[in-house]
Length: 127
Image (cartoon, rainbow, N blue to C red; front, top):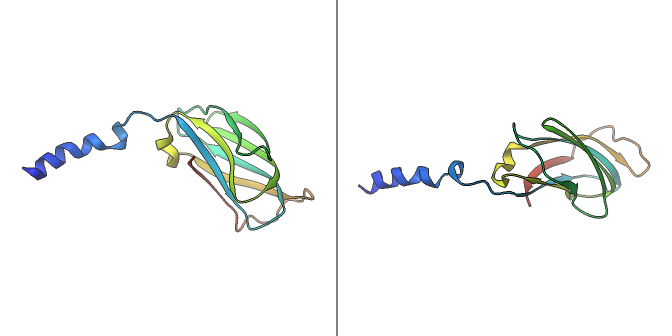
């Protein structure tokens, strides 16, 4: 009987049935360099999701963005180091794993593009 009760209760505890939890997600940036000054990142949202406010995670950065359908292109300028670089409002933070992010390019303090992006990473996580 205990097993039958557990099987009936377990699906009710699933995140799929939990109400949406609006909130913030952040883009985390990891760099192997100490002199990054600009980065372009592409953020793709799950189907049907509209991003809320998008902004830099720190006043030390300038962030510009443009959204077209499910893709938002972020351009960040400033002394970039490893950590959160951008944040955005979403209708459900439980869906963080459904957002994808890709680093397009990085430039150093002299505005020279990095020839390779090995050692860099970007991820989307709950704030």
